[in-house]
Length: 320
Ligand SMILES: CC(C)(COP(=O)(O)OP(=O)(O)OC[C@H]1O[C@@H](n2cnc3c(N)ncnc32)[C@H](O)[C@@H]1OP(=O)(O)O)[C@@H](O)C(=O)NCCC(=O)NCCSC(=O)CCCC(=O)O
Image (cartoon, rainbow, N blue to C red; front, side):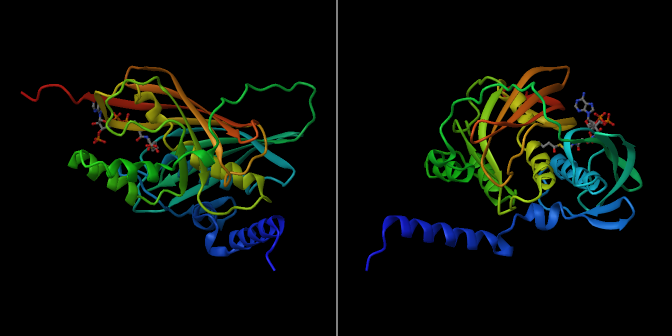
């Protein structure tokens, strides 16, 4: 006998849930990158996963791991509400990073941790993270989420690249660059709201919107873990927002200098969130970028801000 539509739907949902619980489908961010090894009291060691082509460690990985180390030293009643980091030295992908936690202050409702990320005996990042015991408040407001198509209606970056590559007029050098992007194992999925200008011909406003989520399953139990994953995700593709108005320029050297985040509401980093990125200013070989992550139901989950060094070269200048 044919199953009813509702029964069929239920079966599909159950199968998807069983599938999602299978261990090997868990996000590599949870099983490996953010799964720090404890060496000593308040001392941890992290593993690398994806290393950018710059061959310096991805800033989001270092921030995410530093937050894991900080979070391990606070009780379950405390929730991370902000962090402030400086990237002091390029991370070396050939050796692991150690994370040393200082229990800076334990207050009644707030508590602060300072984390030093260390390689070759020197700090590569300092991070201060603050945790708070939830308190009710009559003061509540937020901006309104931008109105954009839902993720189901959009293509992933990989699908957009494949579509672009199927155009026979694409230059070989562009093809090589795009194939390199396809080969990278970034543990994040992205669906741009406006298809990117792969040929970089168009002057654009320093603003972009994309849906983003961690690849794989995380589960809903551990909110602190979702914040650590969001810290990882938040550094990806944020700084390049400052380059959108300058298609004739290529960043010869770019690296994030600092990174700050504020966590406003609960969210799941393995579910689509809208990342709204904008750069209000660039100058003096630096650029400021700000980001907001929205839950699909319109709740503002995370805000972040970052300054980066951007040393740009005009690619259209004569080589004579
Ligand atoms: C920012 C710096 C480099 C600053 O250190 P510093 O000793 O003051 O270094 P520096 O003098 O700036 O030199 C760095 C480099 O820049 C060169 N340079 C210096 N001045 C100029 C110039 N005027 N024009 C062109 N190049 C210049 C220098 O010769 C240095 O080059 P070199 O490293 O020697 O090959 C350092 O603090 C650092 O490396 N911090 C860590 C930054 C980092 O690793 N951030 C995280 C990774 S970036 C990221 O994850 C964003 C990903 C975004 C994405 O793509 O999605």
